[in-house]
Image 1 (cartoon, rainbow, N blue to C red):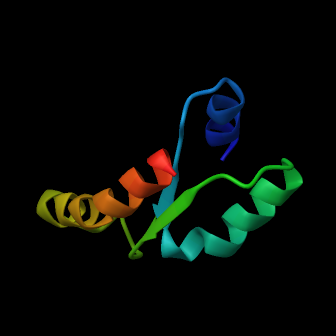
Image 2 (cartoon, rainbow, N blue to C red; image 1 turned 90 degrees about the vertical axis):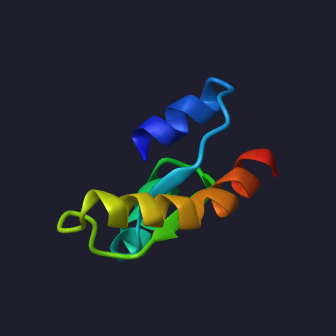
Length: 71
């Protein structure tokens, strides 16, 4: 979240991407930083997924990330 907020502050369009388990935690962190970054959440968990499963998650989220970057 800190990187997202810092990049946005520097004028770099950014989207925070995390697994769905971190929705509440990311909202709390963003609030404490005084930020409201564009965020996209993918299915949880991440760590036990195969490379092909991670690629599928990324491909499924790509459209939403692109929209968030260009909105």
